[in-house]
Length: 424
Image 1: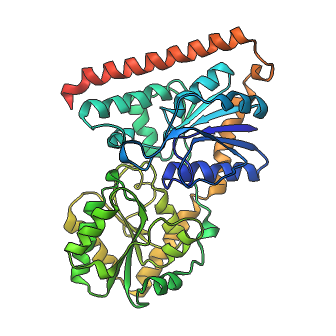
Image 2 (image 1 turned 90 degrees about the vertical axis):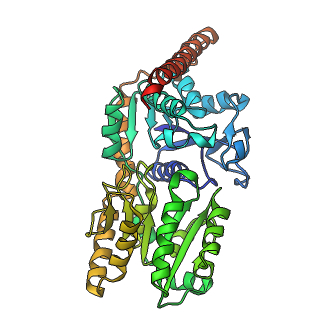
Image 3 (image 1 turned 180 degrees about the vertical axis):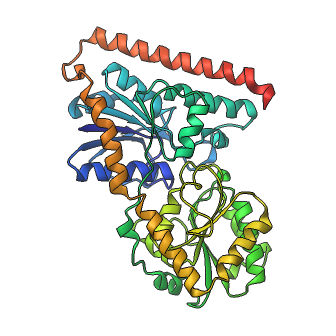
């Protein structure tokens, strides 16, 4: 198959969607499929990317670390004509997601949409957040999903949520997998030596994007309270993002900065080594749809402590492979870290064993095959008129139809958001 992926975030941007698109694309190519990724320009991107078409974009939009792709690209149609796509896979319901819809309609190709994100929790990245804006984000994603031929969701919790929100398109659970074998045998001792963390220290760890939606102030407050109780504890806080300076200032005020290590953005095999340096991985986000870092940590043999949410309840089993906490009480979270710290060696080994077993259930190979099996009937049942070059008038008509669907979806979402605003 010739698969086109359209995404608003892609490498070198750090985030779950960017990682997911890259991981699935790589796995599809290993199986002999062709993949073209269409993504915005980002600072520090690789100069030449054989399988990627970059769209001109506004960098660091609204002070964030996101790029906003501009709506028109002269190179896009020519590249698609050469590539001859069989299926269009959109990873967002807006910006390049709208481009994906136009391409699918114009070329009469099946459209797949992965509902990666609970978009209402991310509205602060583009505008002032409010109940109306959050409702608008939900409506946009729901209406977009209903324009697709198939919706993929990263967890069963999200499948149920989308049904509740009114998605009528068929929905299938397809998590972003992890290459379990790549996370075995990390050099945790090397990372500890590099960061001057004693071998005997108990290391609480976190890796991810430092964004407002990740609930990091809660996490850092809980870890700080634990660190005040346990002098031989260090906190490995890896990643980058807009909250980085705020988090560093917090630990400075707490008098703990000498035991807090913030090595910045971590890529490639360094992620495996970073996880291997941790004794537990802590996670407090309640906005995730999967939480890819959880499966990476578990594949590295690191038990997880997390708040219950859509992205965690299918993966973390309380007191089996970590701790799953069903409330946001700080002391409850601190107690969970104490519980894991105080486990005897046999109990900790069992947690590690179960964590690795859980990660194997989310292997990249099986997740990619699941997605390909879902693609096949869509491609097989499609008449593929796009292989015959359509006349210009035919293209214009199809584009007008796609544009009308977009306008109708936007205005309908706005109307629904305004009508339901008083209920928020």
